[in-house]
Length: 279
Image (cartoon, rainbow, N blue to C red; front, side, top):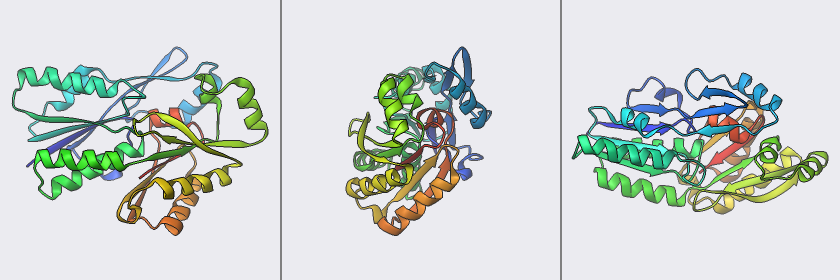
């Protein structure tokens, strides 16, 4: 059976997917001040980070429209999947579901399923990788949905921020706390809840210590890591990502590790120097 995966642009694309017609990135729109930036192949991370640093307001994102998802569903594939940013963080999931309902009105019988990643960034990438794996095994559409849903249930996402300004600007951290944390070099270790929202798991003084704590949390919460792929995404800090990769490989011995640079939405969340782990 042929297939297609539409993944919203908070999920990073593997290099081999960028020229694969079966994988399509559905872009969100980023807003910095009064400027709108499309999170597609034209996205310039360094320029975006400069604009975010210079803007007193928190950057925001707008999810793709149902019509944009309908366009992604227009294909000859037998099985069509959408993978979206957590519904707790964005309207992308609801938009993809509405787009599916509208599309099926004119295309009854088409097999489409929308996965709420309950994650972001590399978590979405891992889900798309799991769909590809299931399709290549020749599993039925229904069995793939069951398998991937179970995979999502077991998945966890973690991140450490170098820069706390986005948290301050969006009201998750007071200015006083942000100043104190910056002065003491305190870095929060953040994670995903089972529902797909964000929570603070830990904190440490200094980025390296925070990364060590994050790796500990990955080991505690990750299920059967030695059998799984770990996704590491970084925002403009490849050396830090390499250090994290080596620590995870040495301590947790996963089956595979993929490392990717953040696209637009993930860059907005992670900010300059942030690192994200999904497993």
